Image 1 (cartoon, helix red, strand yellow):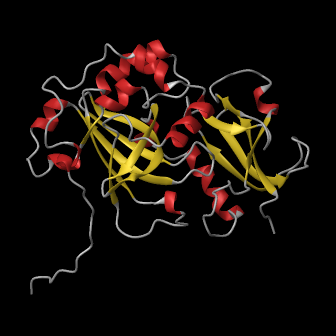
Image 2: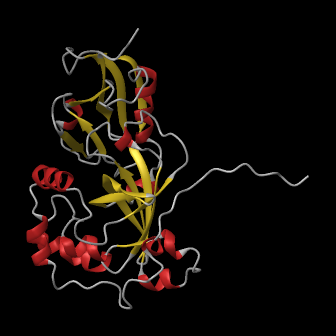
Image 3: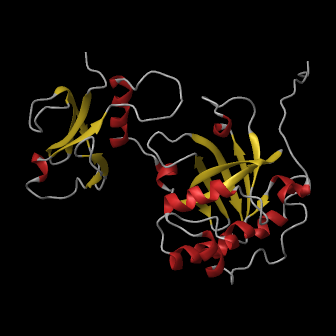
Length: 302
C-alpha cells in the first residue's frame, strides 16, 4: 500500500500527454511507474511542481518543444504540510492524488489572485487582541478587491478569514447601519505597517496610494491567537489600526525582523500619501464602538 513515504512523479510521456504516477522517494527518476495516470493537456497549461521534496518550486511549460523535456521527471511530495496544532491524520495518497486534478480543472477565481499584502487585524470587540494577517487578493474590478487571509506564509498556513476592499465612492453608497462594519486603511498605509512583502518600495507605494483611500470589511473564522485547533464559534468582525500606540510592540518588531522592513522608514517615505477624499467617515471603524457577532436562535415562520 502506498503511503506518505511515496511521491508523485509527473513527466511528459508524449507531446500532449503527462503521466502521473506514484513511486518511492529513493526511486531513480526514470524508474517505472506504479498506478500511472495519463492526463491530456491543453496548452499552454503551466505546471508548478518540485524536482525533489527539498528543492524549491520550478515551473514547467508543457508547450516547450525541447527534446530533453520528455526525459525530465518532477516530483510532488505526498507528505502532509506542517499545520501547527491542527488535528487530523497525515495526508493520504488518495488525497494527494487530487492534486492531479489541477492538470485538468479550471481554478480561474484563484488564479486571479495577484497580490500579497501583510497587515494586522484587531478584534472589533477587543482591540488588544491582534493578529498578523496575510492577504492574498484579486481585483473584481477597479473598485472592489477580495482577499483570502492566512495566518502565515508557511505551506501549512491556515485560512483564517476574508476581507473585501472597496473604494470611497462605493463606501459612501452604503446604508449608515452598514458603515460601522468597515474600517479605513489610511493609517495602516501612512504608518508603514501595511506592506507588500518583497515588492520594491517605489512599486509598492504606487498601489498603496490607492489602498489608502479604501475601506475594508473583514471577518475571521479561526481564532489562532487563542490557540484554537479548528475554526470554532461564530465569525469575528475585525478592525484595522487607526492610530499610534495601538499595535503591540513585540508583534511589530517580529514582523519587521522577519521581512526585513522598517515601519518608521516607510512612514517617512509615505508621508505624501493621502486618505479618502472626503476624510475618514465618522461611521467607519465601528463608529468608535465595540462590535461582536452573536448567534441567536429564531423561530421559523410556520
